[in-house]
Length: 235
Image (cartoon, rainbow, N blue to C red; front, side, top):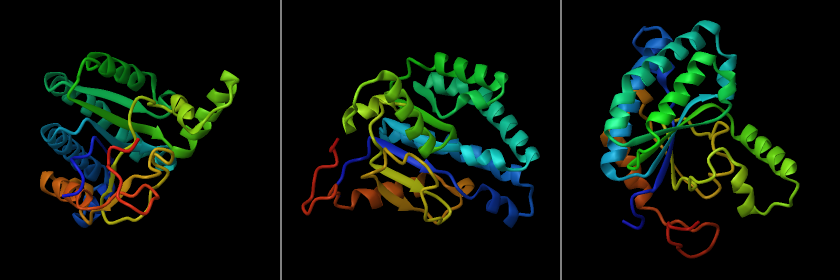
């Protein structure tokens, strides 16, 4: 295979609603099943030696969903934090978040802060949850920070103003459920990211499908806009 295991993988977790609909279940049950897939993929990423895993958990556009669905999602997120935090600490997984955290309730904000604090020493995997996240909003926020700083920016210095400036760009972005769009996710960071689309709905996404997506990426030649192969360690 041409490429090594990616250092950073990003995933657009799609298909929870369709998974529930096919089973004549409420949409929230699809989200609940999707939480189990998160656990499987985090465990697989850690086993495979992936250093950064970014999951698109809740977009800025998701706030327009029905109130009962949003309320259910918030409850599931609280359940996830409470249930998974001991495992994250035990397995040396550092939990981080990107996005507009201030749009969440005070309870959730405090829980996120506590989870990030308790896992901050985790050095095996950074699990980055994109919460109330939008790629355009991240760029706008970064531009405003740069203006506030009052200095001209270059492509490299601009990175300092992003939500997670220390995290390298993802080499691989996976989208599940066979949808073929980026949905306002990591727009700046994915300029040269390889995309792999999986037909599997997120609640059915498992370690085998995760590895299949990684293998598809590893079989590609990454050119970064050039005409000859360039090492995947670019950037």
